[in-house]
Image 1 (cartoon, rainbow, N blue to C red):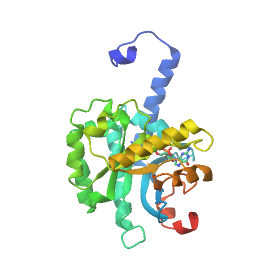
Image 2: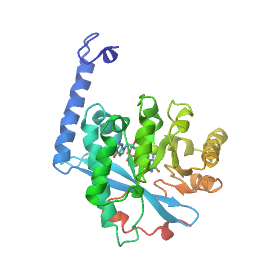
Image 3: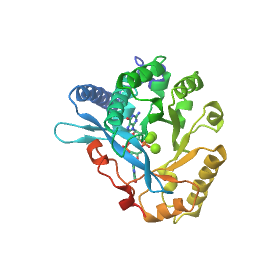
Image 4: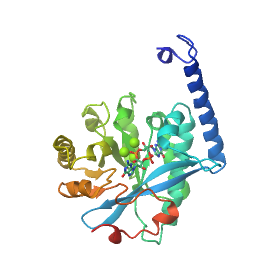
Length: 280
Ligand code: C2E
Ligand code: MG
Ligand code: MG
Ligand code: MG
């Protein structure tokens, strides 16, 4: 109602509404301040290929820790950042940090491992986005094939008119694309015709209880069939138990990510991982 009519329109006064608006602004300001005072940093979560137990990529996950030690979840602050220009600033921060990691991994066992970055629909709406991405890559001398952009189906609802053009443009630099949280959006399969993708990430909600719930397993298998038929790589997210892993091992989804395999880790800790110890 009020929201749809625009920022300066009020339907009725409600104390709770005012409180929410205030919190949002407070968080937005705190986030800006946090960005300038090194409260934001990245963790990397490994993606492991079950066929050879090798780490084939990592996903960059943004972290925010306040001076008092409190951790704020990206589930909370990303949607707030998306309501302002702040999301663009955060995405550029993430991209720069990712390029720094890629550079620092040269000459280590992590050399050449691509990093996945979560994008917001707002990023793709910005007419300068591809140019900014390429400028950051050039600045750090990092090739585009080291980057994978994760987008969710919800961006196709936002009616970004030139989405295929932006994606194609970035693809010419070697950047690959993944559909994140596949199956949780409202979009039809239409978007799979609109853009070329390389990976489908199966949302953790479809992985959960595959062992005990036959319907859940049927959905997961159907998603995997879609990926196989489209000839894209499948990544199962949020693997927490051995039974979930056993299920995935019985399918044509070969790449896994989840706390059972490895939780998100700081850049220093990711260098210390030995995957052959972890999986058998
Ligand atoms: P996502 O992109 O789907 O990322 C996967 C989420 O699953 C991460 O949550 C990760 O920590 C969590 N996860 C990994 N393994 C497991 C597991 O075994 N069990 C469970 N229950 N969860 C697991 P996180 O880090 O809290 O991030 C939440 C969401 O916030 C992300 O979901 C992504 O949509 C968004 N996000 C995180 N970092 C960024 C960023 O840099 N930019 C943007 N635009 N969004 C981000
Ligand atoms: Mg993701
Ligand atoms: Mg996901
Ligand atoms: Mg997500």
